[in-house]
Image 1: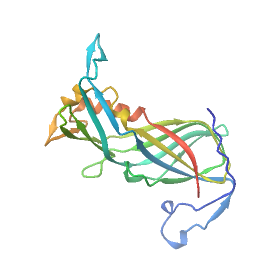
Image 2: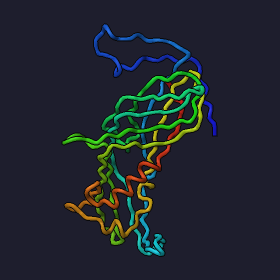
Image 3: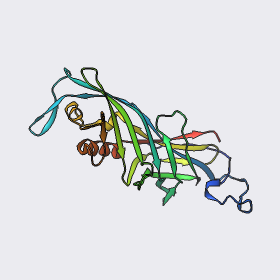
Image 4: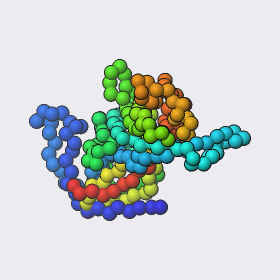
Length: 246
């Protein structure tokens, strides 16, 4: 469905992150009806899940009832974003817009940092928003860490940690928009935490290897769970454009 966001005149200050700190290179405030500030961000929702028992029937997983369930809740997480990328066509011409990095983002904070670029007015179509994650070397912070708690039928709580350390793109598609100026825009990729456990059963989580009392899920530990969570992470996110005050 096509969406129109109509805006009038807006002031913008070219980001200091993109220029030198020397006073001689400071660019003064400019005014233009031709551009709009666009803020990129990331957020999460729906942290609580229920894992059902299941079994194989003719090669397919089927539910065998709710007599035994595992409760799960994501409780915290951080992400280090190499850059945001927006691909689209403006007035029929393809373009790509990239933002600066955004580090140590608390995915459970109500007030999150954002990364800003300046876009030209016009009609944007075929929009794809991408969050670019880059493999961390040595002791550098990982691109993504999520923590949660698995509760068993016996009310035993097991800490869970999902450590993601790969080059990857979290992608979401967006409808068409028209930008003509007055208010800034924001767009966020929304990670639906509940959907990260799609196709994961109670039995699989019960069978996970514990390390010092924690279920650690990485590309070398509990790799079956890791592959499923990774697939859900990269394919089940959404984005949304909103206007915001300058």
